[in-house]
Amino acid sequence: MVVCVAIQLVEKFNTVRNITIASWKRQFAIQLSLGEQKNAVELLRHVHEQLIQTVEEVRSIHRNGMQQRREAEGELARLRDDVQKRLAAPTQADQGR
Image (cartoon, rainbow, N blue to C red; front, side):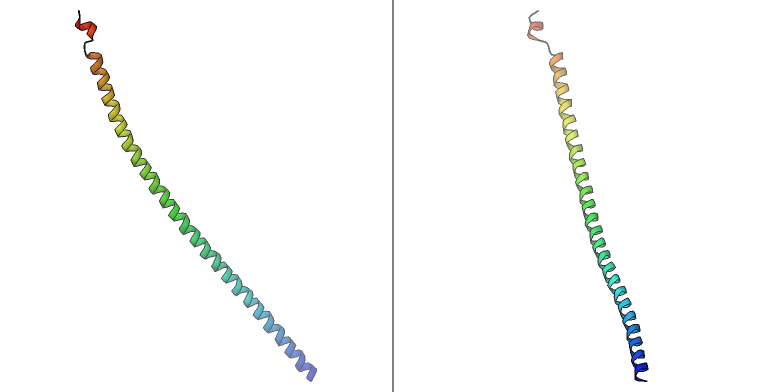
């Protein structure tokens, strides 16, 4: 009888142990997964911010480039006009004739 009770206690202990360890493993895996998801979300936020910053920098560079191009085009037009005026103006040799 005592042996039978001891066997039942051992069986119950094994059952409880198997259930508890399996549950603990699941909880641990869930917590680990949640931690990894949190890290992934933080990484995505960082990548998102970097992407936005890069796009803003590109837009700024593009605007500056457009402004510099307009300024260069204006300077080229002034230089072209100057050359045309100088070529059209009479030279000293032409004035002496």
